[in-house]
Length: 325
Image (cartoon, rainbow, N blue to C red; front, side, top):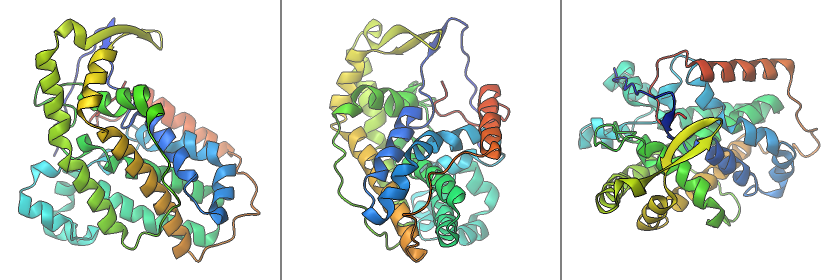
């Protein structure tokens, strides 16, 4: 099974790793922007529930500490597999992959592509039943996993630079950079398109993420070697804590060297999330949702959210921490 990498935090200074994958900020922004890619027949429904879609974009991260087996749904460590196995995995359904490589092995190194495919069937069924609560819940969750698949550091065992003396790079790439620069990104993506093959599309996204990994790691090392250590980090206050964060100067140099990579991966996330929702709706027979009322959270929803937040704060399960704050 996957090794658990512990990290020590002093009571005074913490290396800011980000809120979670893409950061809370990034996941919420991706789901929110995806709403505006939808055609009119769906736009009204999602827009009146846009706050739910936005706020619940982070629930899968919170579940990592409350639900056994949740953590592997967020990543796949391609580099632990030989190249021929990587190519083989892309062609296999979940049941075929389990039969050939065992569930224990797959769970040990992540299952995000198969999780997205599984959610395609779940969301399509929710649309067919016009189950508003599940449509929204599954839409928010699917947006999260799709966005995770677009992150290069979600495709490697060296997910936080812990193997290359780059600890903290996970939150740097997917939280710090989007928070600093995403207001400058262009998110004009046009309307959602139908995805002919979800399996192929999500594996393509994972492959593109993995192809970008060398740049993510090597460029950070290159700038670190050129810039004095006292220029790499800055001390700030955040949430009542003293935080050691990547400096604006270091962040700008790294972001510029990446040559719009973060923007491209974020845009790809938004586009595929919108495409995914649209595809599930089409495959469900395009049910009419225009006259539905905005969804109001039930007591069950509120209790579940409270439990997830509590689990996140307490870190009940010992799971890998890509970018916890």
